[in-house]
Amino acid sequence: MKQKRGKIELYIAGGSWRSKADGSNENANRLRSVGGLKAFLAESEIARYVLKYVYPPEISKAHIDGFFHIHDLGSGINPYCAGWSLQDLLLRGFSGVRGVVQSNPPKHFSSALGQLLNAVGVIQQEWAGAQAYNTVDVLLAPFIRYDGLSYKQVKQAIQEFVHSINVPTRWGFETPFLNFSFDLKPADDLMEQGVIIGGKMQDKVYGDFQEEIDMFNKAFLEVMYEGDANSSIFKFPIPTYMMSENSFDWESEVGQWLAEATAKFGLPYFQNCSKNTGLNPHEVRAMCCHLNLDLKELKRKTGGLFGYGDVTGSIGVVTLNLARLGYLSKDEDEFFEKLRYYMDLAKNSLEIKRRVCNDSFEKGLMPFSKIYLKNLDNHFSTIGVVAGHECCQNLLGCSIADDEGLEFMKKVLNFMRDVLVEYQEQTGNLWNLEATP
Image 1 (cartoon, rainbow, N blue to C red):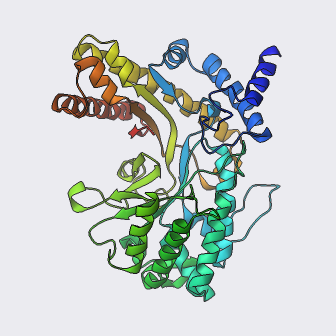
Image 2 (spheres, rainbow, N blue to C red):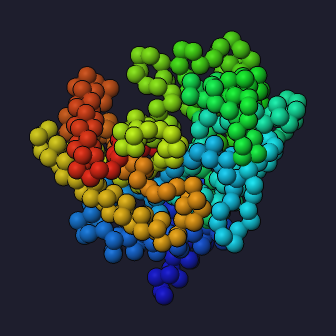
Image 3 (tube, rainbow, N blue to C red):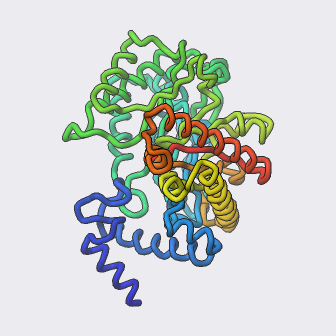
């Protein structure tokens, strides 16, 4: 009881690194408030529970001693991030959970945005991190023509959505963390597919709506460029543009707005899918700031992308402290021995978390997610890295910008990638390597 009282008083005084009174708290999207206090207490208890009762001592000790960081321990019984199928939402509507208001599939642009807003706000509470929707511009554009909307009306609707998503309505007095990807023109698989309006596939196809796709993108970029009432940046949704040689005309009006918004706020992320990268814009999805998921791995696992392309994400993230490993190693051989040891511990921790999350999922603790997901099999386990530069300084006495340091870090990442392939073969689960924010 004394411990709980201490935590309450610590939070109120702003003395916790998770909730500093000056606003420099662990999560910049969470505001200090009564709601934040409740989340702080609940998440502290969950973190204590998983470290003491879920993970074995060697994993908990590695986290506490700083060899790696298990992210979101306060969400230790639920997964990290997820991507959702906007097509599925347009077909089903936001409904399916007993005792909660049911919505038919949207027939209008405003109701499609409204259901998307509700879905993000509610499902976000069942996940620790980012929620993502892909191909947003292409899939929503047909509603504009079917409603007969002017550009002014489209911009107003998008402005209302963006303002609403940046309000702290999530658990813990926090804004939802939302990512959108934009394709700028229909992909080959959508070009001849019938558009979805009112939950039904129509005769017209997405390839017929380039004018409305351009209108949507221009309006969205203009809203993001203008910012809020104080001209401050909108934090969400974080836009990612899938860029290839033929994605669109940079000299177009949309291209100009994209350049203006980028110059003002550094706003979007760009996924380089040009020929030299070997990436297909529809085989890679950006889930959050630095987490990219290769949907080719899902194709291997499921036999096809249909119904699975968007419904993926990450179970959890463990970040290895390369600086500490470099400091404690006498030479490269010892470094790689330590790296493999702590990667194996990280793997074990993520396998444990996968089992715990599956249990939460099956026992009904994620009711909205369960409407749109069959299971968590298509979600990756993620290992990240931090402090590569400091690792080079500690182990090699040079910078990561020096040739020796750069080559060493390439060797480290290639080693880790090969180990993750081993894990994937051993466990049958999907693994990926992240540049941890």
